[in-house]
Image 1: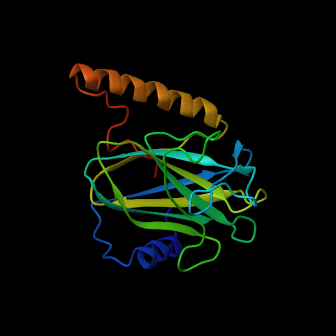
Image 2: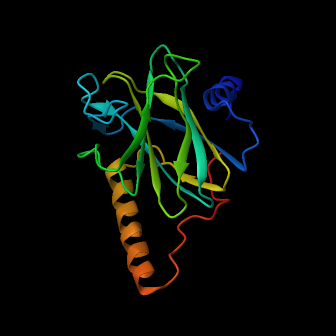
Length: 197
């Protein structure tokens, strides 16, 4: 469910027209999720967020271009969000690998996060990690993903361990690689219409 604040944050953070081909809204919760030593905005390990609960959103796009992401906590007094973007894989035990970008504070808030105008390639799979600034930052959130192409995004159902989700993604990526090296079409795990709202 999109809140007016979430729309405003995304619009102000991106400084572009809202004429996106696709906008996907997701709701999640990092409470009780596995933890990792989150990187800073520059990709180095954090000394403040050494054991931060996180949740992973796996996404693919139909068209290469500039994409934007925003995360807003349901209760900003309890949860200072942080977002991290990875390409072709995310490992909580090696969170510097495949790192693309991160954001702590969006332009309109010191507790919400946004990445705007990030160049994505449709040949790759991306992982948007929603987490917090410190170890005590966790809770419910709303995320908005937007860009010029269709976005397929999945988020684990509550109670599904992140390790199990990542293992499924790793198997699917390996199968896709094997088929692409044989010249077969890569399997489609999700249709562009299969999104949570």
